[in-house]
Image (cartoon, rainbow, N blue to C red; front, top):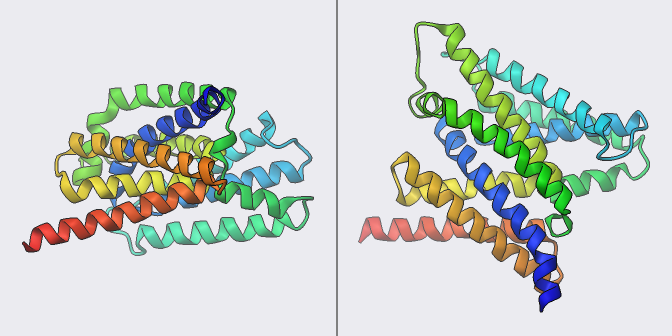
Length: 272
């Protein structure tokens, strides 16, 4: 029993950290209506990693992570700076194209790298059950730095997310938007290294969507996103460990089904 607790302490801690940060960002992303941006960013990060592997650098080496971050930040900066108040093409369409392009290029590169297809599978499904304390600590320190930025500029970010705030100073507005998306991109890249693309996407969207069904105020939605994400992560990890099944898909299934159950309850309450 003691050995089980010690073993699960690391993935539990990782799940709490991921659920906390992604629940916060998920509230912003739902309000902005750009639901699939994280999965597109994650795929671009994976593409950068594939390029690093193709160049001969070891997986998770500093060089590979640097290439991954550079690719991600370039894409996210371009997305933020070219965003228009009256777009001709919806942002979701652009995000979808970026995701498909990133995935297609990664698949092409995987053919040239030994074990490339296995890496893509691992990137998508993740394996939080075997995360190390070293990874958890690095993730926590990075998220703490991002959290400080959002403590300072959080009110501005919230106004932009909630109201699509339009100021007379377009440069200032784009600068704040760029800062938000850069921090978001950094969080997504680091989260994917710990949990995989599917887990990151579900922790970003599902808890926030579930919280939105019952809570209207901003702070309440963030708090309930944290609670739902943390409980879902811990339950999924326990399910995976107990029945020897993949942890990422287990958490995704639990949180995905939870949203539909809560939506049904909400609909029932509204019609009663």
